[in-house]
Length: 178
Ligand code: ATP
Ligand code: MG
Image (cartoon, rainbow, N blue to C red; front, side, top):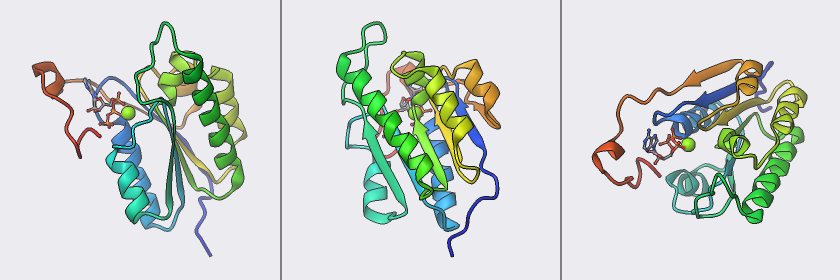
């Protein structure tokens, strides 16, 4: 019999420092090692060149990652209809994964940003948190987490930016940043 959490919590990883998505991936690895199944929806991301996508596909049958975004950046002031449609599709995929009972840990990567950019209504995310099955652990990542999401969560962690190589002009590195 597969293990099941008695009570799943909601986590929010936010802030401007590096480490939000990678913290969620670390949690996924830990959960998988203990026999749990993990589902991640990546909002606003469409590039297949992420290490986590390749690792999950190659080595981690208990880790499903679905992207629901374009490869290009979303223009905060003027998101394209396609950006909005993909974010809403991601939300529908997330609702189904949470309700399915198939997954113990569900990660909504960058959903905080999708809410901040108004691609997804805040209320829909609050509803998902409220209505999730008791055993599902839910993780929301991304900068600019709405105060109401943080208030409704059990674990809230802010990554504080102290330094990042970006500020001396360094490029993102394969295997470290993506
Ligand atoms: P990671 O995916 O590395 O855990 P993150 O999820 O905390 O980062 P995001 O806001 O999602 O951060 O940004 C993702 C990308 O931006 C990564 O390539 C990351 O290295 C880079 N990044 C993170 N924080 C900063 C920052 N403060 N300044 C510039 N680039 C950053
Ligand atoms: Mg991130």
